[in-house]
Image (cartoon, rainbow, N blue to C red; front, side):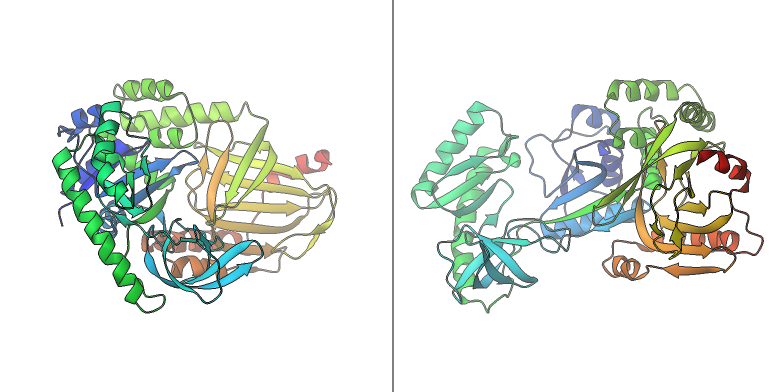
Length: 484
């Protein structure tokens, strides 16, 4: 399949290199990447798929485009980049079918969809049992989110999205006044005929004759789609407009992309790690990139970690972001009790202020207890150990997760993979909370390569924590009594 792909965001050089070497034609290429990869900028050519990062999660990349093309690009990325979590929306954009209106539930008009009940917007009337054409207008990655439908169905082209109405809108990437004027002139005939047109970013520099040809074809296909969906059985999908996939890049994924990028331009160790942590001073990362070309990779990584450790030892507090695959995050703050490793690692100490029960352990939580949390960069687990105020070990809770990321500021994050191991005193170990883990496997969020590494990590931790000779962080016992 011939593919054209646009790539944007902080991973663009590395991903562009991977795709280009896999036979994909890159379009709308930035001058810097065109120079690095020695390829054409291909301005004005339409993309079948766009690969980009979103500002609200710089550890995630998004693929969006025509379904078959997205599938092909995702296959290339999944084959090359290790240890990514994969999120596929329940439905794409402009997936079209005939629905039946359920009626009002609260203030929302509700209709049926192939995936359950959905919220209907842009409707003429919300009359129970009415059958109407509908299309999805929102990407749903969280199974707890509501599917949103519109009665105004659309058809998607490379340059435009066609619906019913009488208005023209433009992608915010189309900034040329001359091009906007040209597109308005082209649109006039179709708007008079009752079509609405959303001009896509691909139309910004494209050939006008190609745009006009596609617009004629899209309006014809739109009329055919309207007839087809009217005759279709209830809830049978008759058209898929665009689909998407999301990838959460882990610490290992970013290290891999560092190495890919380094093949075409100077790239400091942890380049993508720095940028994904919201470090806004790109000039600093750029300077480190230039300096990295003067030392070996082994020496460079030692220097970066040495700097990390010196910074961490100056910090008094750290924050751990314990993120769920659903996107929900739990934040834990603690005093830095130690930085014990040659590579970045932290031991955080928290004094328990309230009574209760420790989750998972099901043992009493008492005022004055000490919780020690150990996190080490790159590890697939985080360990929590609990002691009473005299320093006696009460239990351990090990959560397995994506490889831990620790910034030099002490900010620590990972994604919970929903497998936990607990040990209560000398009573041995047990696994807990595996139901959600199996759901993540079934949904394809946890990939085969992650599963294999997780099994290896579990075996290693089990041999350590669950052995009769297991020794908690006993060297902290003397400081525990003074922290009441």
